[in-house]
Image (tube, rainbow, N blue to C red):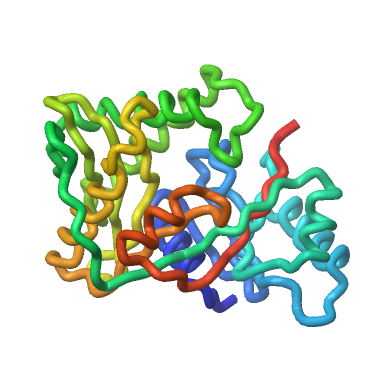
Length: 273
């Protein structure tokens, strides 16, 4: 299957670093064996419904394909290379799945955004920096649920998942796939994000922009996006890509930093239980 959207193609680029992405002809299988609870790391990348295709038949086809491909998973996940349309969205939600349209934005030129007073923006370096990443994500999730974990408890299982994800990010950086940046007040991490690409790749993709709840609406995330992006461009990237859910406040921030909309891909999830 040929992936056409910038958002999904860069997502699958990253998924390969911790797992595998296998072309099955009419779809791609995304599998992260070491992280079975990583919903978007274990799913199918599929084409959107064709013009005139029955939406319920399309949905049933890929739901069944997931169950055959990943029978041990308690969740169900489809990454759609485009928009599914209103009729298919209705079939998805009627079946109890969650749906999120992700807007991919891109730029080659970022606006100016200085760091707020008292903060240092730099790449993470060393154990003390990295050990703060998972706690920052958990603090953010406890204050404001993500689209996927809304209504779910922040329990030991979820904390373990977040720690595993943080370890994977560190491994990507150590293998040369990019950098993880932070905004520091002294030695304390106040915000973080990743900016990564394949070795020698010309497209750099942002990951997981997170700000401590007590530090939001101070321009920290904007300054960090700009600083990390300018560093990536200086290191050889020719294009920056960032993704946000279509209804998130982050879209306004990214557009104000110089990003323009490129395309849309859709995530469909049925949570366990």
